[in-house]
Image 1: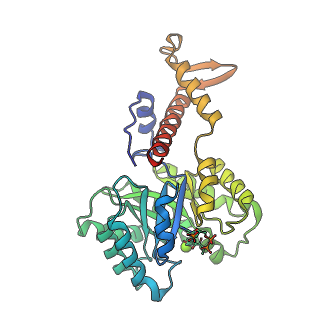
Image 2: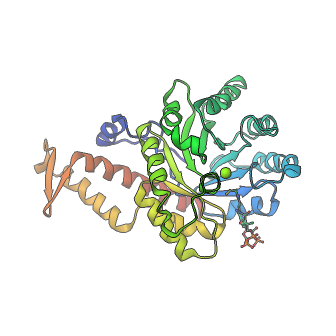
Image 3: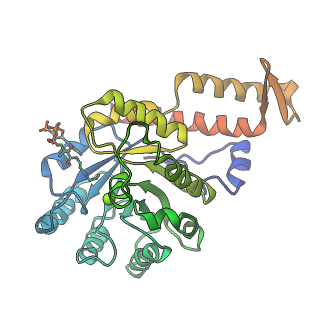
Length: 318
Ligand code: COA
Ligand code: MG
């Protein structure tokens, strides 16, 4: 995917704010998880419209299949074209019997990122960082981290802040509610009401340190109405996208996390209003009875930029 450098003055001001991303804007509406042991699913990925794919070596792969799964990835990723969708490999957690061989697989496959499950302390991230540095992995190989244990929620600030240390590669947090429910006893109720405080805390921590943040998987891939509602909730909470388990979930996720037509028209109107000669030097303007400030202009520019990236991607995949 191309990383368009934001050319906008207001975007630059926005990017200088401490709570906004320091890495390029990426489109991560739909992040599909694919068990690395499933060759049929791996083969299907190229035909799918998801923004990113996580090839999983962890929970979806039985212990006796780990070696075969790594080999599948070596075969599949060696044929990958550079412009293909963002590719992530989820390894088994540092300290597990499978982790070292999984990291060797990552270093051989050179995905865009390695996803570390069950991180609890910054040291879990630093261990992977050290391994990548030791192997001279390119800067472009990034780290994502799963927030899916009670300790991770309690340590969110330190975990997210570790993304701001020198030479850090941490780009993105991904919430894992299956593990979090298992270890806390919170029931899978509609609306996720008892989980919302932890979800919001994860969004807040990610934003405080300029990281992207992806909402958890939803296990029921047949009830797409309920899934669309959960995507809308995730979007309203501020998530960048959703981790998915099934191709049927890609369309609803892309729709919910992409800019709506209405939002795009509003953003374009804000940009036009600030570009008008009468707005020169003004920090705040009146648009049809609504106060609009330059921070809204910066937001509008990011939204239009993302919409262009999505359109570019759709054109390229046609
Ligand atoms: N990625 C790519 N393709 C997938 C897929 C996925 N995650 N899930 C299903 N498919 C494919 C199937 O291979 C099948 O392809 P085909 O038409 O060529 O046979 C098609 O989509 C329809 O699949 P379906 O029959 O509806 O489901 P299934 O029984 O094959 O698989 C799951 C259901 C849940 C086992 C499967 O979706 C899956 O493994 N999901 C990911 C699980 C995971 O990664 N868990 C860890 C993170 S929480
Ligand atoms: Mg998990």
